[in-house]
Image (cartoon, rainbow, N blue to C red):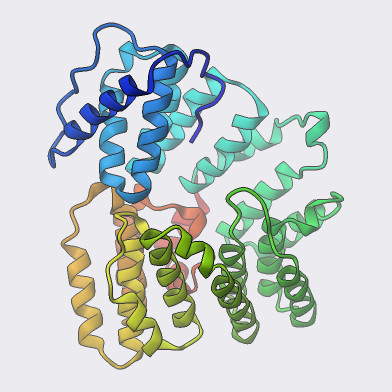
Length: 402
């Protein structure tokens, strides 16, 4: 989340910040609406707010509900926050709420406060996630790159993503071809994702196979860059267009890399191994190894986040593919009772995946439409467990955006 550019004074003691955070956490425990914490009277300084935000961000990784409650408690006292921190609190709160429209509005305020290219690039993806295509296009069209950004195809990438959302494959191909004229872009992980989608949709199997080989040979590296995520995404994208043999090549490579990362996961303890288990279960499901996938996916995640909802969906799909339809239906009914509002979008997507597995894509489309405001649209076109649901007229209209 966006913390920098407003931290000026770090004189506050860490003890003060921890005590303040404890009060916020205690307030967040209320299942209804957390009462306002007894914060110190008057305005808070930037350093205090920064430390609370940073620690609350860490908490939200394990418990999205608690994280949101802390950000919401701060938001209730926004009149006492330094002006430069208000937009950051709004963005963090909206992001954890799952409300895509609220997140877009929070980013607009952030961009007004800090009209820089860094925030212009940030809001573009937020707008596409909310289906606000026209506004995203307008910002991209007026984007003026700095000298250091001259090799970044910002407009071309956005046009490619819009075309993918709209299933306009010729337009997507034109956009990625234009972006590929930028010297460094073709070897970036996101470039491979977009180009694989474009070639897969065009049915150019020979070129697609060569590009996939190149993508899998270039292991993405960098801060918070997970090669397993990208390799899995490559497989998902080509699978969306029926190239299952090539998709399996990417998924097997992702599984190989995942196994190599296990020692690092063990160093992170239970949480790290939990993440490996979920990822491995999902990959085994994609590869058709449903018995092994079911075994891995049965245990609940230690984190209250979106992936816990997806785990239930993946398990339901695995059980259905094993011939246990009743188990899949029971898991769907369990998700239907979910009342965690900040996971509403993830729950809708999870239930839509189960509905498609059960042969009910129209019901899946209804579930997505009912929670449209909370669904990240950018993530839908590369989800092979929703391939038929995405062809439903209502979902096609939703993905075209406004």
